[in-house]
Image 1 (cartoon, rainbow, N blue to C red):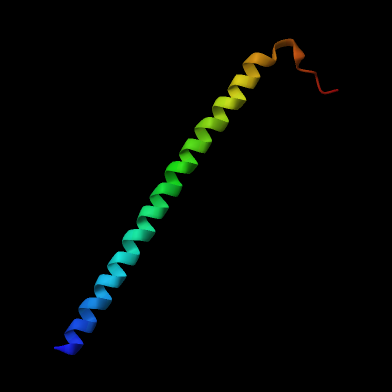
Image 2: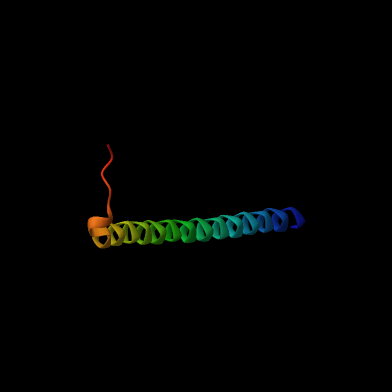
Length: 58
């Protein structure tokens, strides 16, 4: 019975670890998507508002 409890405990610990790792990776993924959207928005805004201030590369 003691061995069964050890095995069950190990399974629960491994399951909890994978759950936490999955949640962290999901959060990081959403942060990457949000950062990409903000970056593209900022670059687009600067491209539109720059107007005649842009200088040509010669």
